Length: 260
Image 1 (cartoon, rainbow, N blue to C red):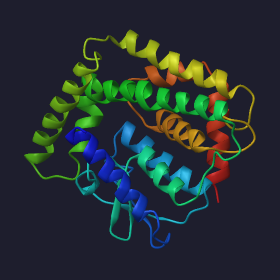
Image 2: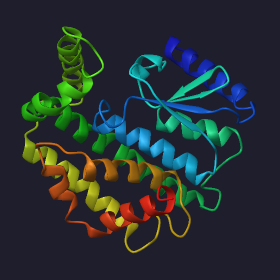
Image 3: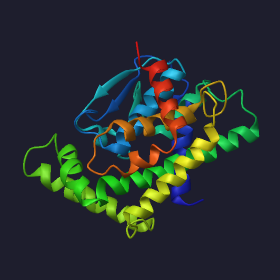
Protein backbone atom coordinates (compact mmCIF):
# COMPACT_ATOMS: atom_id res chain seq x y z
CA UNK A 1 0.00 0.00 0.00
CA UNK A 2 1.33 3.48 -0.87
CA UNK A 3 2.10 6.07 1.81
CA UNK A 4 -0.91 8.10 0.60
CA UNK A 5 -3.09 5.00 0.93
CA UNK A 6 -1.83 4.35 4.46
CA UNK A 7 -2.54 7.97 5.43
CA UNK A 8 -6.06 7.81 3.99
CA UNK A 9 -6.74 4.59 5.89
CA UNK A 10 -5.46 6.06 9.15
CA UNK A 11 -7.62 9.17 8.75
CA UNK A 12 -10.68 7.05 7.93
CA UNK A 13 -10.12 4.79 10.94
CA UNK A 14 -9.57 7.80 13.22
CA UNK A 15 -12.78 9.47 12.10
CA UNK A 16 -14.67 6.21 12.53
CA UNK A 17 -13.47 5.98 16.14
CA UNK A 18 -14.13 9.65 16.84
CA UNK A 19 -17.62 9.36 15.37
CA UNK A 20 -18.57 7.49 18.55
CA UNK A 21 -18.31 10.73 20.55
CA UNK A 22 -21.47 12.39 21.78
CA UNK A 23 -22.68 15.30 19.66
CA UNK A 24 -22.02 17.95 22.29
CA UNK A 25 -20.47 21.42 22.19
CA UNK A 26 -19.92 21.23 18.42
CA UNK A 27 -18.41 24.27 16.71
CA UNK A 28 -18.00 25.24 13.08
CA UNK A 29 -14.95 27.44 12.50
CA UNK A 30 -15.19 29.77 9.51
CA UNK A 31 -13.42 32.88 8.25
CA UNK A 32 -15.21 36.19 8.88
CA UNK A 33 -18.08 35.56 6.49
CA UNK A 34 -19.01 39.15 5.69
CA UNK A 35 -15.50 40.57 5.36
CA UNK A 36 -12.96 37.81 4.73
CA UNK A 37 -14.43 34.65 3.18
CA UNK A 38 -14.04 34.29 -0.57
CA UNK A 39 -16.74 33.04 -2.93
CA UNK A 40 -16.00 29.32 -2.71
CA UNK A 41 -15.19 29.35 1.03
CA UNK A 42 -18.40 31.22 1.85
CA UNK A 43 -20.35 28.70 -0.25
CA UNK A 44 -18.88 25.70 1.58
CA UNK A 45 -19.35 27.29 5.02
CA UNK A 46 -22.99 28.01 4.22
CA UNK A 47 -23.48 24.51 2.78
CA UNK A 48 -22.22 22.88 5.99
CA UNK A 49 -24.48 25.04 8.15
CA UNK A 50 -27.44 24.17 5.93
CA UNK A 51 -26.67 20.46 6.06
CA UNK A 52 -26.44 20.43 9.87
CA UNK A 53 -29.72 22.35 10.13
CA UNK A 54 -31.36 19.85 7.79
CA UNK A 55 -30.00 17.04 9.98
CA UNK A 56 -31.28 18.91 13.09
CA UNK A 57 -27.85 18.79 14.71
CA UNK A 58 -27.00 21.74 17.01
CA UNK A 59 -23.78 23.68 16.47
CA UNK A 60 -22.13 27.03 17.10
CA UNK A 61 -20.52 29.14 14.38
CA UNK A 62 -17.20 30.62 15.44
CA UNK A 63 -15.74 33.10 12.96
CA UNK A 64 -11.97 33.30 13.21
CA UNK A 65 -9.40 35.22 11.13
CA UNK A 66 -7.15 32.14 11.11
CA UNK A 67 -9.79 29.50 10.26
CA UNK A 68 -7.75 28.43 7.22
CA UNK A 69 -4.80 27.66 9.51
CA UNK A 70 -6.93 25.94 12.16
CA UNK A 71 -7.93 23.49 9.43
CA UNK A 72 -5.74 20.36 9.13
CA UNK A 73 -5.57 20.82 5.33
CA UNK A 74 -6.36 24.51 4.83
CA UNK A 75 -9.96 23.82 3.80
CA UNK A 76 -12.87 25.54 5.55
CA UNK A 77 -15.16 25.23 7.35
CA UNK A 78 -13.76 23.15 10.20
CA UNK A 79 -16.05 21.13 12.46
CA UNK A 80 -14.71 20.67 15.99
CA UNK A 81 -16.17 18.03 18.28
CA UNK A 82 -14.19 17.35 21.45
CA UNK A 83 -10.56 17.23 20.22
CA UNK A 84 -11.44 16.14 16.68
CA UNK A 85 -11.23 18.50 13.68
CA UNK A 86 -12.94 17.67 10.37
CA UNK A 87 -12.58 20.09 7.48
CA UNK A 88 -14.60 20.49 4.30
CA UNK A 89 -18.17 19.75 3.29
CA UNK A 90 -17.69 16.15 2.12
CA UNK A 91 -15.69 14.90 5.14
CA UNK A 92 -18.17 16.57 7.53
CA UNK A 93 -21.10 14.85 5.79
CA UNK A 94 -19.23 11.52 6.00
CA UNK A 95 -18.49 12.07 9.70
CA UNK A 96 -22.15 12.76 10.44
CA UNK A 97 -23.13 9.64 8.48
CA UNK A 98 -20.76 7.56 10.63
CA UNK A 99 -22.67 8.84 13.66
CA UNK A 100 -25.82 7.26 12.22
CA UNK A 101 -27.39 10.47 10.86
CA UNK A 102 -28.28 10.30 7.17
CA UNK A 103 -30.44 12.43 4.89
CA UNK A 104 -30.38 9.83 2.11
CA UNK A 105 -31.78 6.68 3.70
CA UNK A 106 -34.96 7.06 1.62
CA UNK A 107 -33.07 6.96 -1.70
CA UNK A 108 -32.50 3.91 -3.88
CA UNK A 109 -28.96 2.99 -4.94
CA UNK A 110 -29.62 4.46 -8.39
CA UNK A 111 -30.92 7.71 -6.93
CA UNK A 112 -27.97 7.91 -4.55
CA UNK A 113 -25.50 7.45 -7.41
CA UNK A 114 -27.29 10.13 -9.43
CA UNK A 115 -27.20 12.52 -6.47
CA UNK A 116 -23.49 11.96 -5.89
CA UNK A 117 -22.74 12.54 -9.57
CA UNK A 118 -24.44 15.93 -9.46
CA UNK A 119 -22.72 16.80 -6.17
CA UNK A 120 -19.41 16.04 -7.88
CA UNK A 121 -20.43 18.43 -10.67
CA UNK A 122 -20.94 21.21 -8.13
CA UNK A 123 -17.85 20.34 -6.12
CA UNK A 124 -15.48 20.16 -9.09
CA UNK A 125 -16.79 22.07 -12.09
CA UNK A 126 -18.50 24.90 -10.25
CA UNK A 127 -15.66 25.17 -7.74
CA UNK A 128 -13.14 25.63 -10.56
CA UNK A 129 -15.38 28.33 -12.01
CA UNK A 130 -15.38 30.12 -8.66
CA UNK A 131 -11.62 29.76 -8.20
CA UNK A 132 -11.06 31.20 -11.67
CA UNK A 133 -13.30 34.20 -11.06
CA UNK A 134 -11.82 34.96 -7.64
CA UNK A 135 -8.12 34.50 -8.39
CA UNK A 136 -7.61 34.57 -12.18
CA UNK A 137 -9.86 37.48 -13.17
CA UNK A 138 -7.68 40.56 -12.62
CA UNK A 139 -10.47 43.01 -11.81
CA UNK A 140 -12.09 40.71 -9.26
CA UNK A 141 -8.71 39.97 -7.68
CA UNK A 142 -7.79 43.65 -7.49
CA UNK A 143 -11.11 44.96 -6.19
CA UNK A 144 -12.38 42.09 -4.03
CA UNK A 145 -10.12 39.08 -3.50
CA UNK A 146 -6.96 40.84 -2.37
CA UNK A 147 -8.87 43.09 0.04
CA UNK A 148 -10.98 40.29 1.57
CA UNK A 149 -8.19 37.73 1.86
CA UNK A 150 -5.78 40.27 3.32
CA UNK A 151 -8.33 42.06 5.51
CA UNK A 152 -7.27 40.35 8.76
CA UNK A 153 -3.56 41.07 8.38
CA UNK A 154 -1.39 44.15 8.88
CA UNK A 155 0.77 45.58 6.12
CA UNK A 156 2.81 44.17 4.40
CA UNK A 157 1.17 40.75 5.00
CA UNK A 158 -2.18 42.02 3.70
CA UNK A 159 -0.48 42.39 0.31
CA UNK A 160 2.08 39.60 0.39
CA UNK A 161 -0.21 36.76 1.53
CA UNK A 162 -2.87 37.34 -1.18
CA UNK A 163 -0.06 37.40 -3.76
CA UNK A 164 1.31 34.08 -2.53
CA UNK A 165 -2.15 32.52 -2.33
CA UNK A 166 -2.92 33.71 -5.86
CA UNK A 167 0.24 32.10 -7.16
CA UNK A 168 -0.70 28.80 -5.49
CA UNK A 169 -4.27 28.84 -6.84
CA UNK A 170 -3.14 29.75 -10.36
CA UNK A 171 -0.80 26.76 -10.22
CA UNK A 172 -3.76 24.60 -9.18
CA UNK A 173 -5.83 25.96 -12.08
CA UNK A 174 -2.93 25.34 -14.45
CA UNK A 175 -2.68 21.71 -13.31
CA UNK A 176 -6.42 21.34 -13.99
CA UNK A 177 -6.07 22.94 -17.48
CA UNK A 178 -8.10 25.95 -16.38
CA UNK A 179 -5.37 28.56 -16.50
CA UNK A 180 -5.69 29.19 -20.24
CA UNK A 181 -9.48 29.37 -20.33
CA UNK A 182 -11.21 32.59 -21.35
CA UNK A 183 -14.13 34.21 -19.56
CA UNK A 184 -16.40 32.82 -22.27
CA UNK A 185 -15.07 29.32 -21.55
CA UNK A 186 -15.72 29.79 -17.84
CA UNK A 187 -19.24 31.12 -18.46
CA UNK A 188 -19.92 28.11 -20.68
CA UNK A 189 -18.72 25.75 -17.94
CA UNK A 190 -20.97 27.49 -15.42
CA UNK A 191 -23.90 27.23 -17.81
CA UNK A 192 -23.25 23.50 -18.23
CA UNK A 193 -23.37 23.01 -14.46
CA UNK A 194 -26.47 25.15 -13.94
CA UNK A 195 -28.29 23.52 -16.86
CA UNK A 196 -27.65 20.03 -15.50
CA UNK A 197 -28.70 21.01 -11.97
CA UNK A 198 -31.79 22.82 -13.23
CA UNK A 199 -32.82 19.75 -15.21
CA UNK A 200 -32.33 17.49 -12.19
CA UNK A 201 -34.32 19.80 -9.92
CA UNK A 202 -37.08 20.43 -12.47
CA UNK A 203 -40.24 21.33 -10.53
CA UNK A 204 -39.39 19.29 -7.41
CA UNK A 205 -39.16 20.93 -4.00
CA UNK A 206 -35.75 19.40 -3.36
CA UNK A 207 -33.09 18.01 -5.67
CA UNK A 208 -34.05 14.39 -5.04
CA UNK A 209 -37.78 14.79 -4.41
CA UNK A 210 -39.84 15.73 -1.37
CA UNK A 211 -37.11 15.40 1.27
CA UNK A 212 -33.86 17.37 1.65
CA UNK A 213 -30.45 15.76 1.22
CA UNK A 214 -26.87 16.98 1.43
CA UNK A 215 -27.11 17.76 -2.30
CA UNK A 216 -29.63 20.49 -1.47
CA UNK A 217 -27.32 21.92 1.18
CA UNK A 218 -24.34 21.98 -1.18
CA UNK A 219 -26.32 23.46 -4.06
CA UNK A 220 -27.90 26.12 -1.85
CA UNK A 221 -24.51 27.14 -0.47
CA UNK A 222 -23.11 27.83 -3.92
CA UNK A 223 -26.23 29.36 -5.48
CA UNK A 224 -26.93 31.70 -2.57
CA UNK A 225 -23.33 32.89 -2.53
CA UNK A 226 -23.22 33.51 -6.28
CA UNK A 227 -26.49 35.45 -6.11
CA UNK A 228 -25.64 37.60 -3.09
CA UNK A 229 -21.87 38.21 -3.14
CA UNK A 230 -21.06 41.44 -4.97
CA UNK A 231 -18.33 41.04 -7.57
CA UNK A 232 -17.26 43.29 -10.46
CA UNK A 233 -17.70 40.29 -12.78
CA UNK A 234 -21.42 39.53 -13.21
CA UNK A 235 -21.06 36.62 -15.66
CA UNK A 236 -21.97 33.93 -13.12
CA UNK A 237 -25.12 35.68 -11.93
CA UNK A 238 -26.18 36.46 -15.49
CA UNK A 239 -25.81 32.80 -16.50
CA UNK A 240 -27.70 31.67 -13.39
CA UNK A 241 -30.61 33.95 -14.27
CA UNK A 242 -31.38 31.67 -17.22
CA UNK A 243 -32.63 29.05 -14.74
CA UNK A 244 -35.45 30.52 -12.63
CA UNK A 245 -36.15 27.23 -10.85
CA UNK A 246 -32.67 27.45 -9.28
CA UNK A 247 -33.49 30.96 -8.01
CA UNK A 248 -36.81 29.72 -6.60
CA UNK A 249 -35.04 26.77 -4.95
CA UNK A 250 -32.57 29.12 -3.26
CA UNK A 251 -35.36 31.29 -1.89
CA UNK A 252 -37.20 28.22 -0.54
CA UNK A 253 -34.17 26.83 1.28
CA UNK A 254 -33.31 30.21 2.77
CA UNK A 255 -36.88 30.70 4.00
CA UNK A 256 -37.10 27.19 5.45
CA UNK A 257 -33.78 26.97 7.25
CA UNK A 258 -32.55 30.52 7.87
CA UNK A 259 -35.59 32.77 8.35
CA UNK A 260 -36.71 32.78 11.95
